[in-house]
Structures are given as C-alpha cells and as structure tokens.
Image 1 (spheres, rainbow, N blue to C red):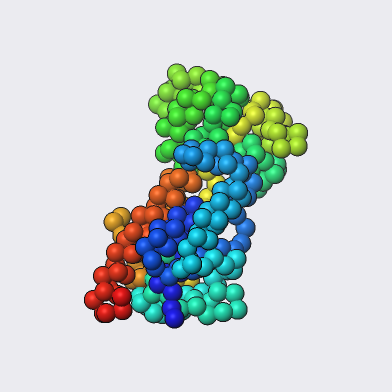
Image 2 (tube, rainbow, N blue to C red):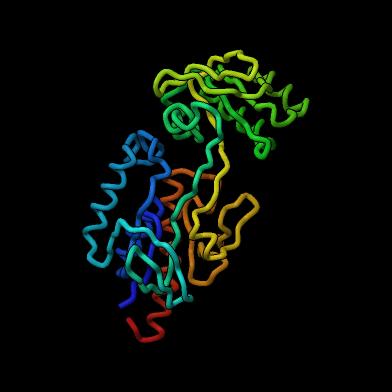
Length: 305
C-alpha cells in the first residue's frame, strides 16, 4: 500500500508537516538522514515554548509526539532518488523502494563556508547568520559583519539591523567590493566602522572568537561575527529538475507550496533566504494543509476514502 506522502527531511519543517498530515489521517513516511545543518548550534531560539531548547532535544520531542500517530512512520534513512509522477511516485529509501502519492521536500540547504582560517571551527559558536537567533545572548559585545559581494545590496540594512543589539559593530568587506559613498556615510553616522582589507583569519581561544585578523596583520577586536555564506541545494533537488529562484531557492506556489514538478512540494529553508526554525515549522504546516486538501478531494472523488 503506498504512502500518501513521503517527507524528505526531519527538521522543524518536516516534523511539523508530518504532525499535521498525521492528524489529518494520512499515511506518512518521514525520512531523516545526513548531517544536521544546525549541528553546531547549541540552542533553538525564537520558537515559542521551545526557546533555548538544544536542537537534538527539539527533534527528540518532535519524534516522540509523532509516535502517538500509528499512520506516521519515521526512518533514519536517506532518500537517494524519486521517480514517477503525481499520485504514483517511487522513492529510493535506503535499500528499499517506497511508493507515495505526494512528495514533500524539507531538506534545508547546504552552507558553503568560506576558506577563512577558523571560520568552520567557530560556525554556530561565535559565527552566526541570524541575530534573532543569537543576538540576545551576545548583546553589547564587539560584533562584526562579514559581507560578501553577492550580498552588497543588503549590507546597509543588515548592518543597521545589527546595531539594535550592539553599539560596537565593524563591517568587513574583505576587499571584495566597493561600498558606495552614501552607504559608507550612513554606516559612519550610525557608529559603524568599515574595514575594507582582506580577512586573513579568525583569532580564537577554543570556540571563543577574540579578533578578526586582516591581511596586513592588524587585528580587530570581535567576539561575534555574522555572515551569510553561499548556500546550495541538496543533490535530490537538482536530480528532480525543480525550478529555482534567482537566489537559488526552490520556486514554489505561494498558496500550495507545490514546486514546478506536479505532486512535489517544498517547504522550509530550501525555499527562502528568510530562515529560522519557527518559520520552517510554520511553512511545513502550510504545505501539509495544502497537500492534505488536495489529496482528500482526490481520494474522496475516486472512492478511495
């Protein structure tokens, strides 16, 4: 008997979708494997009732709650490929082939960390993407923002946003691009320093950042660094041939979360650069509701209910 939905990815989006579909009496398979994108993070923040929860504990609670629904199966297995069409998909799950009427991708994104000494070791500990997730704990400390050329248009608004958590802020461009005079003036007016030299390495003591060392050897005191490394989709997304937006996110219908391939839906971080656990969870529920409505009408019309 085929599953109604196979969900690929067991983070907040996948867990929330599985819960909603399970409660809607759909037969669901949730597949979760591979490295956690937030494996280095110590806590989940800005998630009401779960603020400060370690990511692994968050997943444990989510799985524990799914166990109450016998129509929801959870496997620690990788989905290596999906074939077929809407209503009749076949997914390679580990050594098995699983049939499903719909597919929901909640695979997240892969962060491509820059080749700066110390960056990878500090990722998730002192180098972050989101001030809403980590700003409170590091407020009023010396902060830095490492901006990329690809994100130069967002430099000014993001830097000014960071000023809400600290008065000691340095923007590093790494010599990758020129900051327009007007933007540089606004940064200075807001008390933000601008360093345009190339970044050589991050100076740290264990997992504690102490300074950003520039190419000329100068060190800029910095205890928290924000950055937005490039991201890429997992291989399954490319293999399915899904249409992407200009920023590389999966294009979805805003109402149904369906991708350019009929019967394949996507939710969570792989569909947006506005990323966060609670946002992914909400998007997972959104996708689940759309899938359930479509499936229920289809099954009722065919007499399968």
